[in-house]
Image (cartoon, rainbow over all chains, first blue to last red; front, side, top):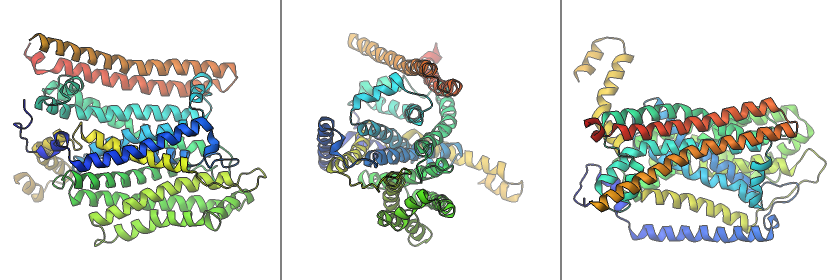
Length: 449
Length: 85
């Protein structure tokens, strides 16, 4: 079937798959060039060793591990938010879930590569398989990230099947791929039931896996006796930060693709206002955890802990620390608590600030503790090299490129969920309301409506 | 007609391959964890903790493979053509 003859009321959602503008190619080329440059720098690093980076003793973790924690944190945007919204039957989720799930898949690949980049000798990753010790948090990390990636990929793929079937029926390029991935889906009741059942099981399963991933990542730090790291609240603190940065990244992606693909009719201001409220809640939670963490350190006044504390608050890292507070707390509170500023533009500014702030938070957690170890070392200095900066740029570009690539194969908004929402949601929500509310005239009015 | 049959055959072949990969993941994770538990005995680590971690991790992968297989079989059997039979 010629895809031009097949017109759908949600045609705009399919348009990016069939039509590609010059701007897309220009941006893709620019991003590919950055990725390529990063790759060249990485090959240089493999050839000449980790001396090409700014890492040294005692600061033996730098940009790579910061980016690892940061990108895995962003991954919480997707599966967790999508699963929670699905589970709570939030109807406004429908145009959001797909983008959230795609973010997870892409950033998990990018984030997961960073510890290998940090190894210097990438072949040594095999030591983890050959001689890994299960009591090491690094191995727990490997396991939880792999489990999360597997679960997230399935969680992205299953709700995609009805849309793949729609693409298959339209014909055109990649038809064979769609045929393979659709598994003969034709919307029969039995198929819908099987799919729905699997999605329901997965959305319950994915939440504890997602929470466990970032908790375990925090344990890489908190299981050591390093000052500034050995904290019992690191698990939940990291999870809160991850969801916080994840929502911010999701908002940025939504606004960018809304503008590029003209999705204004699907991603409305109300979606951003709801996400803005979530962002505000997470900002307050983040501040609460940060305050609790540093107050405990300050009150204990242990000399090694205080060295790290002072390094962050009034020392070399003070500009980054206070910039982090501005980005993660001051800007969100100003923009999101004021109705006039809580516009799409305001929420975008806040989200960009939060993404920068959360990257800085990872920097603040990792470097100052390593620079001021418990052992009597002189204070360490860490200045990232061009290799590390270019690999950070390459990772960010690869993320955007991956997302753009996905949008050329599959719809970025779940078409079948939008159709289902139009067809069934009003009835379902009315029924649900009737269940919540006490029987009264008001309920009858709803029923009649 | 021959082309269509060939295409259908190749689609089924790739789907079979997908299913094989789906089960290859938990199988290889199981082998990996058996190896790691074996190492934990060799180096006298906390064996019980190692076994507990392995059991949880491996179970997650098997359940995920099970869910995906359930969907693939459900979609295959639930197609309208099948329903008519």
